[in-house]
Amino acid sequence: MTTPVPTLSPPTPSPGVPTLPVYRLSVDQYLGMVTAGLLSEDDRVELIDGWIVPKMTRYPPHVITTICLCDAFRRLLPAGWYLGKEDPIVVGGSVPEPDATLIRGRPRDYLTRHPDVRQVALVAEVAESSLPRDRGEKLQAYAKGGVTLYWLINLVDNVVEVYTEPTVTDGVATFASVTVFRPGESIPVIPDGREVGRVAVSEILP
Image (cartoon, rainbow, N blue to C red; front, top):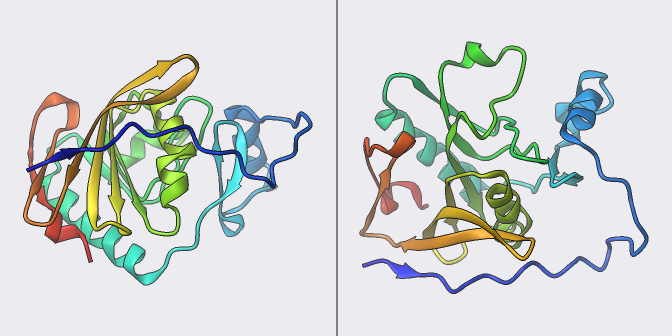
């Protein structure tokens, strides 16, 4: 059986965020910094809603879960789709690097640009220490950008939260529908509105 998750409140601002106005970057400005070499893969940052934020450290359960998730997706992907693993995508004013992404086309289609939300069918994040951010700022960025299917593999509670129906109400972006899948259940994989198979929760959780 699946159980709905209560409506999530907007994240509480970090006390470390300046109270004075600070400069927000556009996607083009951020990608320009990458192109110019001002940011590199060694910096381990991503752009979330205009802010450059550090990527969370990945511990062994996170790493193994991501590998298992990607293996499961690869077995189900139909022709015309490929799997992105920790690769940048453009979602509204953000350039996140999700743990796994189902992307339309072939990798060579994106030699000159990153995939955007029009080519992304599913975004998945594995969350342990990053759970507050993945349920907060990242969830809002994905909803605001129009991601239609967001999987949150929650290693704290040992469940998979599947978010659908992105919406913006009174300026707050969220998902209208959330379903929780537990060990013993399986999750449908639906790129482009068509189910191509199911992933067992026990197959991906450590």
